[in-house]
Length: 420
Image 1: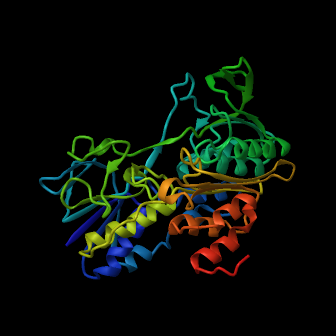
Image 2 (image 1 turned 135 degrees about the vertical axis):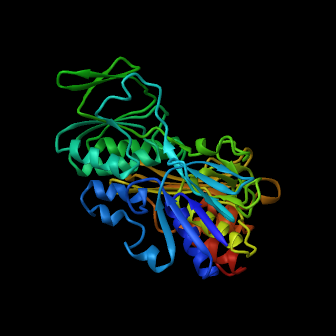
């Protein structure tokens, strides 16, 4: 049995290792299209602040794949032929598979802005991007970061530690708008501004122009910011272009069922490229986070290896450390229409907690949560959401005092009535 895995990020590597552990004698080929061993993009910020060398981003040691009898192939897959069960490579050759896993991840979205292709405008997605940023982001250099989403805020911290003069442009009304509500995003903005970062929300970049002393970043409010480096962190999209003519069902990503199977026989998809089930809603979405990728990879690999494994859906889960202020969101953090809310908001201390409850038969079930500056029991929040436990009278106690979340967890999960 020959298993081919296209994509050498965390999801692909976990898939290869899981197949090897399950079926020791099967042939496994892991294909990556970058001139580097498999690495974690989430480690790039640590590279930018010199906490690690490039080798520190690598997912495994240099001899790991050989020891696991996993063939690692650096190549570019240009298409698949599902009828012939082959992967077509850019050099004109092809590889035959019995089971195929697509783990090609995502790629940065390049916004339609004049000047986005100038030499000193970069994404921060690959090791090569990181090398370019390292060469330009010197102390006191003028850096404009386009996008204050999850990825943007991770990059933000690295840039501040490099002591650059940083301006952040976010078109949304708050920072990390797909993770934090208005109060939480507002607190994060104030925290960054207080640390010397220029943050412009509800603002767009209209154009980037070359200038004698660097670049001019022209904003839609008429402002003009000087820059030596512009970093674009305006979102990502699934890498599906190479399979658009394959017959695979593709929406925002490749559609998969709860076994990570696509609509075509013997083909699976995982991670950022896969549109799988959401734990909270049952809808099919792309969740571009590393825990989802590794979970997908394990489930797909077990099924490829002949086991019967099902995925219960990915929980929307984000944990972000921005200049020492930790923010988290879980599940339906924005709430559901008609659901109750419990909240703590102490802006002068940069502390915020918002609990979201369900409706109807789940009116006493915690379905989502957001926190800023409160890390004591975030694991409990996740556990209550994932377990869908009914809180009973503890719901009202949490509305009265959200800080009793641990008491609610103990009482509800262990069915104790003597916790008061």
